[in-house]
Image (cartoon, rainbow, N blue to C red; front, top):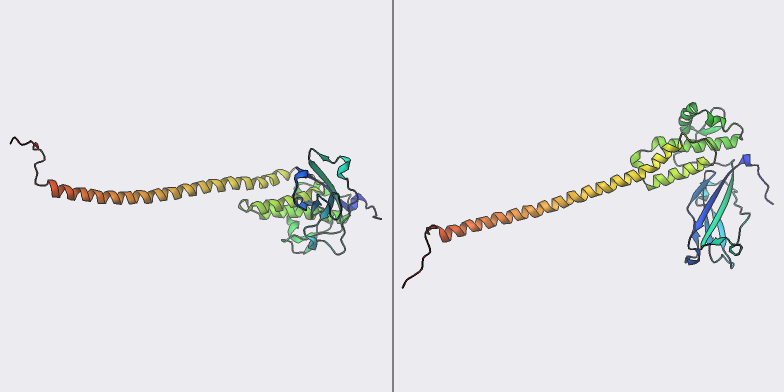
Length: 275
């Protein structure tokens, strides 16, 4: 029997995976995209033909199990079968609700594990505290929104916020490649689970995501410029070769004129013989 845990002690989230052209799937096993709930990465994978059974098998997977504490568990408490109408227009929809106890935490690569007290709310990664103090001074509702929650949940919430702020403060526009965008996406999804009012921050995050698109446009234009420069250099080389050939041809022409026509009056008529 699984003991029901109060929502206050959980971070909950739902992931929906739409699998199109389900009947045409050829692979034995299919994975969903990675998603983040409660600060942890998850994914779903299925066996369309079943795993040691004759019907669809669905599993919840943890891509990075080393980030989880000793004794962690996963539970799936309900599945629907395809015979009950859950395959519509050849689209299979898998919906997963994940509940993560808030008494666990993970460290990101940039975190030292050196914690310090943050406004009496809990112990937070030291490198995040200056950023948190700055935004909480401007947006007091960040603290107010967490006052009725458990200390553990508050620590997780402000750690998630600190990770996003740290990323935005330490990442430049030119750093926003595909990997950086994916990392920010994971951090942002984890932060959203804590139900802060993030209206003040979301435009900046979306702007950061847009950097990848802008960088892509700039990169493509740079490639076009480089290609045109290379083409100009190629044509300059051809022109230089043609000019050299022209110089040789002009020299040959001058020699021929000197040899064949130097003793001839070029203005005299050619005439014709009469006898």
